[in-house]
Amino acid sequence: MLNRFKSAFDPYILALLTTVALASILPARGGFAVFCENAATWAIVLLFFLHGAKLSREAIVAGVAHWRLHLSTLGVTFALFPLLGLGVSLLPGLPVLVAQGMLFLTLLPSTVQSSIAFTSIARGNVAAAVCSASFSNLAGIFITPLLVSLMMGGSGASLSLEAIEKIVLQLLLPFVAGHLLRPWIGGFVARHKPVIGYVDRGSILLVVYTAFSAAVVGGLWQHLPLWELGLIAGLSVVLLALVMGATWGLGGLMGFAQADRIVLLFCGSKKSLASGVPMAGVLFAPSQVGEVILPLMLFHQIQLMACAVLARRFAGEEEA
Image 1 (cartoon, rainbow, N blue to C red):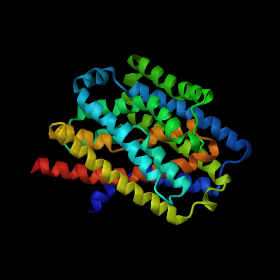
Image 2: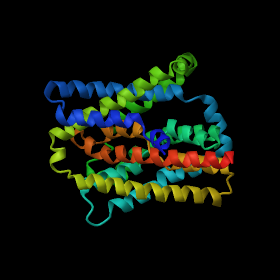
Image 3: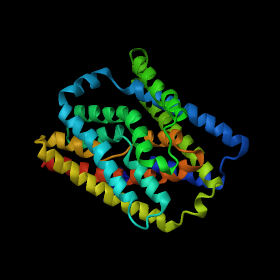
Image 4: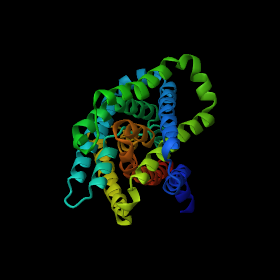
């Protein structure tokens, strides 16, 4: 049981919580806040550049053959999840900040690394997981901003010309540039995965610190009581359970083999913190970002714990 808990708990969550605590005690103000915002912008550019460099051309080509599985994953990620998120956001009596954060997390693409890792542990189709997760992240650069504009336009989110320019310059162009340079830098990225991983996660920590600093200065903890955190956690558990049940059932209805149903389960039920934090920084005002990504941070840890338990159970059944 202790080993399961250790494997389910991501140490990165501790780093995120520490960053939030630091921003709460020592938020960036004045000139230092401006410096952090500029640094966070360049960190986002670097983050998506590395994402582009890590996506292989072979994965794109191989994915075409499994189009039914990938379309199913995309349908769950960008159709079922948003509909459930909309339903949650319309619950009577739900605080506005909780509703906004829960809806935003449902509009995001799937994770990449953890989806592939859990599929591998569960003895699923790893190649298909690479394709599905990669397609989801790539599509999310375009689909998530559109969904945010359509479903959260009245909540301070915006898809104005300025927002489109930010998406292109900070997300799309770095991603494309990284992918085009992959023949020259792909080997370097592969050989230095641990270092690249630190850069990847360090970029998110910087963006989180900047976002929560602005939120704390704007009075975040004065109007976010502790019971709302518990409410977010409870809603996240229910939301994750519904989607996991739906993905497993959909895989059966589609006639997928068990290995492919595992891909749909893990790739379709998760939301990306690595993509969500930078996108929130582009789509929302600085004072809103900290509040918007708080449900995403809680959901991220809950999904890791749930998927770790399920992956080990699938692996045990396979060995038996």
